[in-house]
Amino acid sequence: MQREPSLDGELSEVLVRAMLRLGEVDEEWLGAVSVRDFCHYAAAVRDDAYVAEAIAAARQGRPVAAPPLFASGIFSWSYGPPESELQANGLDASGSPWTEGLQVRQVHGGQSVSVHGPLWAGDELVRRRAIVGAEAKHGRSGQFVILTMTNEIQTVGGRAVCSSEERIVIRAAG
Amino acid sequence: MNAEALRPWSCTPSHVQLARFSAATWNFHRIHIDPIAAAEEGLPGPVVQSTLFAELAWQAVRQWLSEASPELVCIEWRNNRPVSAGQTIRWVCTEVTREGRPPDELVTLSLAALLADDEAAVAAAVTVRASSI
Image 1 (cartoon, helix red, strand yellow):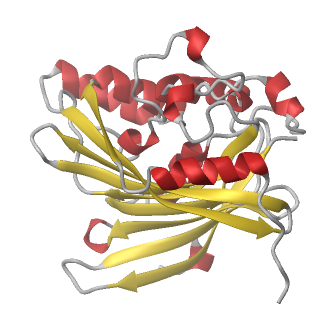
Image 2 (cartoon, each protein chain N blue to C red):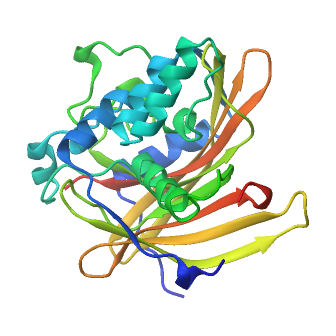
């Protein structure tokens, strides 16, 4: 049987950190979402018809639902961090404790999102995030670690909005 | 509805679009907004965000089903290759499948995002409620 090469030191540190956090659920209060938030997102994705309809509805006092991928598409819900706490690559160090201080690169491998119901302007949300998988791989392009994260977004009243599972691929830098 | 009947839908994310999407989603990973950071990774320009691909796949499906108001149930995608601002992406539908029975029947469209060389940068599957289309 061919022996797999041992895992790069930085990558094995990522794996150990992630495994120690397996199953830990991190709950974050996201605050209330607004028509303005929805419209910024829609304008960025060039959905100009949505922007016009949402503004018209809001002005007439009708409820406004978010674009269905709005909630799962928000990369970070935190109000920070201070610029001094960003990593050199622009990511929030505290948002990825498994790579903090390590010479690694991380990219998004893919995701699945289930939409459970509408998200209305004014809804106040919470998110539960957990690492549910951490695995070392040896592919054609070298070694990497795949982390699997789950996210559940619901209103503070407990109405489910969406859930997702994402794969994050981490490789040694250089 | 069959996959061959759905005409490819093309889009070209611009540098401005990526910057606005990063701002709207509060994503300041430099490879999405800074050409220098992208060049350091050997890429020709700022890289399209993963979550923007999901939105573009959903837009392709809405384009194909524009006679109706499709209700999104789930979406799944895999990123195979980075795409930079200015590159044209051609979304094609490769398969349409149905599961379940009315009123809970679901329709899934499988998509590929092709680049100029016809290689798929992203593979996606978008599931909508059959009663909404």
